[in-house]
Length: 121
Image (cartoon, rainbow, N blue to C red; front, side, top):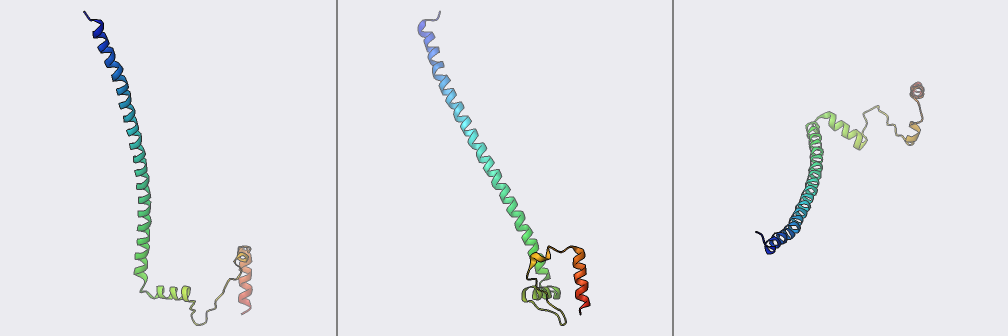
């Protein structure tokens, strides 16, 4: 038969076990939350790195293409025209001083203007 002393031992052990179990459960939940936050941050960093890598690969491809064309006469001519303003003999340079005005013309008006300019030569 159990004595009153024996029943207290069982009660005391549950009083201790329940808070310890609750504390361990809380620590586990906290650790799980921190791990998930770290995982989200790592995934975000990985996405940024992949985006940066794809941009760098695109830049590399563009540079490789430019490198292949550097020695060609077309490349040299284009650079001389765009950067240095060179013209071939007999060519005329048109400089747009009011670019906002260009947007106000329709395609038909442009055709009329170009015809008038060619007739004046």
